[in-house]
Image (tube, rainbow, N blue to C red; front, side, top):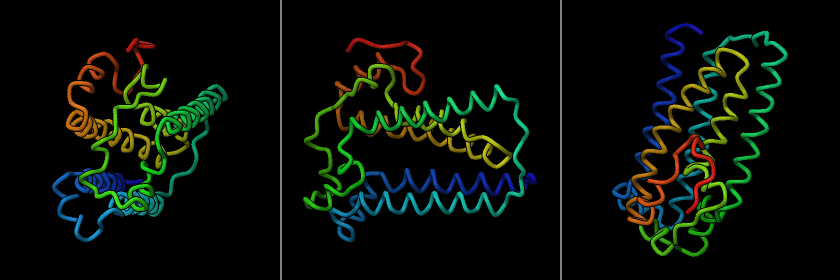
Length: 201
């Protein structure tokens, strides 16, 4: 990949990050509610998936990278990162109502976007005693476990940056929704790296 290829790929990731965050803002939800109604989150997730696939396709089109030769220990380490990342993401997802997470529940029960989660309590799974964003942590491990060539390295770098910045935007939303309860939790538990170990809540 040339420098121009890398810049174009970075712009593709930037477009995903900006649009994904923009569409999650309450003002945008309010604007789109008359059009999408209770299907907002379902449409939001579907659009994010299509956009992410487009970013991946752009990367493939820009890249002619061949896989790197890796030492045996590095291949083993990456396989462990892949397995750990996937395991952590699956374990973390078990703590969520996947119907709400995907938007299916809101669509079925006709819950408008701005009322979404208004009555929902702050739920903390066992993994949330170690870090505030276990799905993101698992995704980071998974991404770096996938690095095989120049394109996958660029993907891991840009996607990691997106996850770090995206977690900050998500924190603002969680503080707005849960107030002091989340602020107290945030003061005790790290965001993305479980450096404090298990925290008593």
